[in-house]
Length: 461
Ligand SMILES: *[C@@H]1O[C@H](CO)[C@@H](O)[C@H](O)[C@H]1NC(C)=O
Ligand SMILES: *[C@@H]1O[C@H](CO)[C@@H](O)[C@H](O)[C@H]1NC(C)=O
Ligand SMILES: *[C@@H]1O[C@H](CO)[C@@H](O)[C@H](O)[C@H]1NC(C)=O
Ligand SMILES: *[C@@H]1O[C@H](CO)[C@@H](O)[C@H](O)[C@H]1NC(C)=O
Ligand SMILES: *[C@@H]1O[C@H](CO)[C@@H](O)[C@H](O)[C@H]1NC(C)=O
Ligand SMILES: *[C@@H]1O[C@H](CO)[C@@H](O)[C@H](O)[C@H]1NC(C)=O
Ligand SMILES: *[C@@H]1O[C@H](CO)[C@@H](O)[C@H](O)[C@H]1NC(C)=O
Image 1 (cartoon, rainbow, N blue to C red):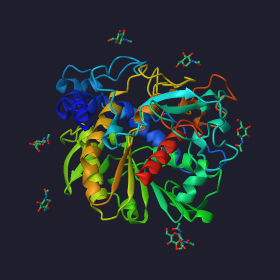
Image 2: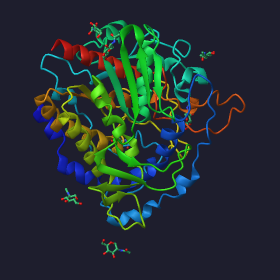
Image 3: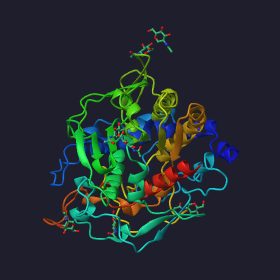
Image 4: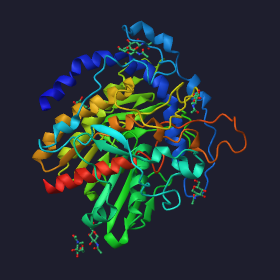
């Protein structure tokens, strides 16, 4: 099984194919998305209605160099941003799409829980906007007035076995005196809020810490002595980020590819379990440092630095992270969560892209975007190298391969309902859509079903 994996992921061909996207189109597409969605939603949230700052950040768009200037170094691949409807177009036809990474660690008798379909499920979601108080305003689709509710009635159904629903009582009992952390960007926060909401059926968490900007938090479940943290570290690396609270950048990010962000590494020994993920922040313009020297950049025209591409940085980052995890001497149970796809259609985040589908895709109905393929493949390759190293020193490293099943859920995003009742004043008002984060409740709850199943397997193995 591992052999098949290697064939699927021939790294040299992968590299060539990705060249153009990596360097140019991708950064253009997602530069501003990251500015806005990752930052503006991360400021103050609570159960009250949050004012949303204006979403179209023209500065970050116009600062992007024109795409055409990049075509000189490109091969036959398009250097243009994919046009409307790219989600369903055949742009990524030539890329490997069907990978079953679970085969890398699952024992033969176990089914691959990451391959399957979404099937209708009439049972109510585990929580609602009324029963859970931890839902961030921008992802509280029910409260914000999303009119359809069909997206709530699906269950992830692995092809060869049943995936039980997360059992919060059993989870909390098995996690007595234990500590969990979700480490990453705002998608990790989205994920931890799903878990908090699921657990709130059994016990309400008590918030015991938050940082100044409410991006990192810690909760305690007193009757189970269970501790849950979310640590905001969008690159996982040492990074200097010059953005104001609206996500407007005054200077390039300075990113140290060989140094970790101490925000999480200093706490790491406190965590028995960690769900760690990188992601879309790597698509931003950044100056790359290694050994305290600038070695290049991503998307920095006029700077006379070597364009290294975000794929270079992402791989280097994951190597640094995984090397730390497998050599820290702390025997934790670690999940490396794979990249989460967005579902902007008929445009991108800044050009009126929407995600108004109301039902999942069937397998084969959608192709993964190139940027997600690049990230996912880097994750799988680096995971495959690191897992055996971790195993030697008692670190359990597992891949939480959510990319594929999430790709099939274009219906699970807030879309315009990232804002409270966006259309009450004016039916035709233009609002920014969020087709990247997930509604709560929503498909991201299934990520926790997967975690629970993997823990059960881990314990019983
Ligand atoms: C996608 O590719 C398939 C087979 O290669 C072709 O039949 C189909 O028409 C293509 N679809 C689009 C939208 O180009
Ligand atoms: C939950 O959402 C519904 C609309 O679906 C709304 O009527 C209700 O007030 C909301 N409750 C809370 C506590 O947000
Ligand atoms: C709670 O768990 C921690 C370990 O995470 C332990 O040190 C502490 O003694 C526990 N407290 C109680 C009251 O059980
Ligand atoms: C939790 O910690 C407390 C205090 O250290 C201890 O008495 C108890 O046995 C522990 N429970 C478990 C399940 O480890
Ligand atoms: C890093 O820099 C130091 C001195 O600045 C040098 O001694 C060392 O060899 C460098 N390491 C690498 C890997 O370049
Ligand atoms: C760009 O960098 C190269 C090598 O570091 C140097 O030779 C060249 O003069 C620089 N060009 C400009 C315009 O600064
Ligand atoms: C979804 O949005 C597109 C435009 O982006 C629009 O043409 C279409 O009618 C919308 N579908 C629904 C069901 O609202």
